Amino acid sequence: MVWYSILGMLAILASYTFYSMREHNCAVKKLPVKLSSKFKIDGLAIEDSKFQIAEMVDSGRLIVAYGENTSSSFFSKLGPLTQQFFTQYPSVSTINGACLLAISEIRLSEYAQGFISIGHSEDWDIVQLMGEDQIFIIEGSERDIEDFEVSFPSIYHFLISETKLG
Image: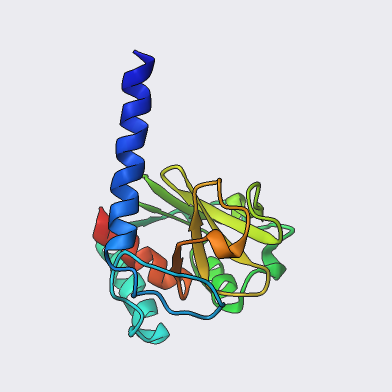
C-alpha cells in the first residue's frame, strides 16, 4: 500500500517536471538563474496581464475572498506589483482550489532563505525575493536560487499560467 502512495507521488512529480521543462525557454530572466515556465507568457505586458486577471475574476475562473485577513508583517517586503495585487485581491484561489494566494499565507519561506512565501499551488510553495516581483515555484528540496527551475515575471503572469492548467 505504501508503494502505491510512493508511485503516485513520483507520477505527479514527473508530470509536473515534464510540463515545466517542456517549454523551458519561456520565463523572463531577471536574475541569473535557469528559468522555465509552463506557458509562453514572457511577451505579455504587465497591463495586459492585469486585465486578463480582472477578466478571470469577473468570469468566475478565479475566486476572490475579500473578507480575508488583510494584514501581514511581511506585506511591505513584497515586490511592488505583488503588493498592488494583494491590495486589490486579498485572497485568490483557482476554482479547483489547487492554488491559493492570500495575505494570510504571506510568511518567510520554510525552504528558501531570504524568500517570502505568498501561497501554494498543490504541494509547491510560491515564493519571491524580498522587494522583487518575480515569482518562483519550489517544491522544498531547492535551497538556492540556482536550483529554482520554474519562474514567472509577476504574480499576474503566474495566475494566468495556473488557470490555463486547470
